[in-house]
Amino acid sequence: MKVGSLTSAARTALSGIDAAADKVEEVARNVAGGSESRPGAKTADVMSALSRLPELKQHARANAEVLDTADTLLKELAAVPRR
Image 1 (cartoon, one colour):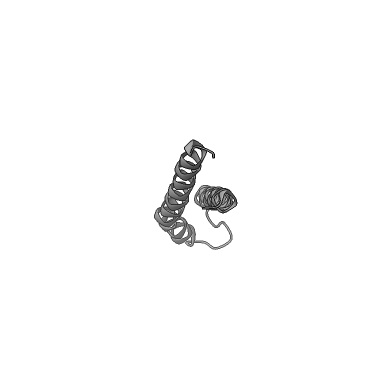
Image 2: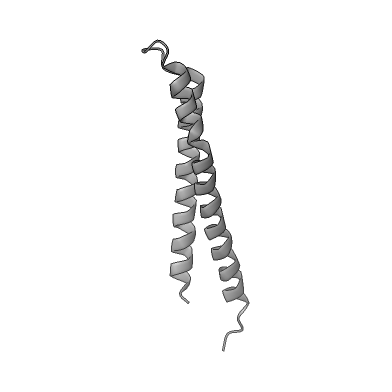
């Protein structure tokens, strides 16, 4: 097992968590602002934005699990006695 692969997995997981957080912020802006340019569309836009939240939660959770696994493996690697 290579340390570089684990750190790469951790970096990728962090990037995924950041991306999910950015999308949640986008959803929040859409919910807060709605769509003022199309009368009657605000409710549909809000519902569409809110419907993305479970997917984004799963996305963040999956990346957090990858990060936790990489952390565990790095700790186990660090504990291996050197010859």
